[in-house]
Image (cartoon, rainbow, N blue to C red; front, side, top):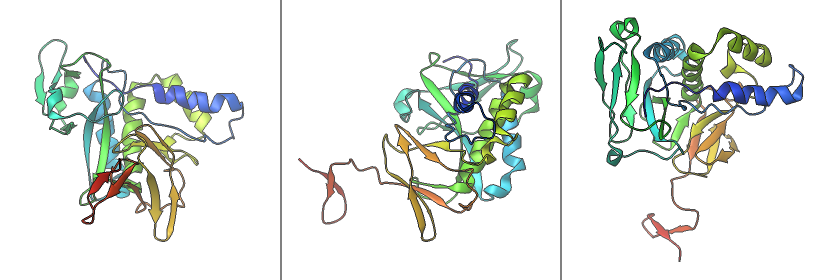
Length: 258
């Protein structure tokens, strides 16, 4: 993979959702934010726009941190065996910086005026299209299989800020018109795609005694972040990752049925 940037597939999908209806006042039923795809020419400046959005909307997730997670293009997680190495560099060679990626594919992007001034880009040591990356906002202390609604709302805004930084003005204006708002993540019926721990994992959205099962497509669960009837403290809980045909032993550990 060479330089990486946010995919404009979000814009294409927004248009695909809205245009067939031919009525701007009809709701967008499902918008799946795919995060970082099409890994070409991803600039530090676009990521910095995401960092700004994170700081501006921290009230959604006051105890959360922002990192970025690398995945295989099909959505499957990376491991240490993938040997990913990332650097931030300018075209003229005046700026070079290594960006560590841990064994789970997580990385942190620090603010850097030098990187901004040099218009540096992220360069991965893998062929283009093999890996994707995306913002991940998580509140400390939550289990790995639980995502908080406020975290996902903030994560969406980080993602959209990065996407918008790369979009031409007219494209942004067109989507704003179709969405009837410049805050796409707050659009009623806006469903945000968050990565599941495994393809087809069961996912439920819970808030107190209220709950609903979420649609999961492959690695992605669609979360109704635009529905304000679900509070920021609502949680998405995925199943424990046991195969569908698994039973359990007396001590609760998975045992695959024959």
